[in-house]
Image (cartoon, rainbow, N blue to C red):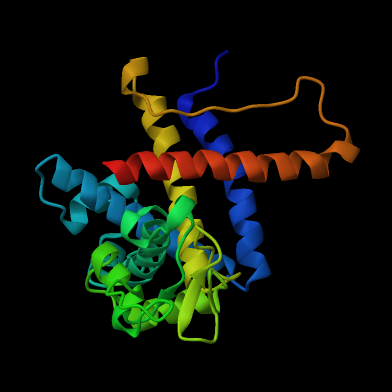
Amino acid sequence: MAQSVKHNLLAAFAYLLRPLVRIAIRNGVLFPEFCGMAQDAYVRVAAYQLRQAHRDPTADAIAVMTEVSASDVSALLGAPDDARLDEVEAKINAAARVLVGWHTDRDYIGPYGLVRDLAFNGDVGHLGKNDNKGFVELAQKHCAGYPPQALLDELIRTECVQSLGNGFYRAITRSYVPEQLSAESISRFAQVVHNVIETLELNLRTQTPEGRRIERTIFADHGLPREEMQAFDKYLRARGQLFADDVDNWLTER
């Protein structure tokens, strides 16, 4: 007898939750706290679905959908939404945008496509010549509204940018990678996992191939010898970065 969709979903949830629970346990997130987070997600998703259906997201309506008590629903809806990571996400996005701009904007690329070293303020000059395009101008162009000094400090702290000690700064990497378990790295983790699941969820309910998002898996038919893993890792890092740069360039042109 074919198993029900609900049964299969519960089995899938149990499987995909295990790495998340592993992270939770390792960092002191207890079961009651995790349950509270899950209850909050049920209430907020139900409220969103009711609004999308042009219905009033009352506590009673959400309670019927989720079997969370109406009193708990009211308390959760009246509390701040902890899943809103706007401030941290803005910091991540600003840091990423300024690095991409530094590597792709023609105003900041020197001869032969080399990324220029920049003064903080463009009027400091470059090699004794007047140059009005420094880091401040780069930041204002690619992430307007974000303080250039705070942005530069973050890029130096995460070793994406290096101070040359002569008033100029050098971009070391094109990618912004926050430090382990910082607010930024945790937010990035949430974004990546959320986006992957959003893609898979859409593909599960979309009937036509044209409406699905691209999703590909590559695997070795007979496995990969352990002694080849280091070479495979090196290959993926190099080729993956080239692919990401190509996509970045395509988007920047548009």
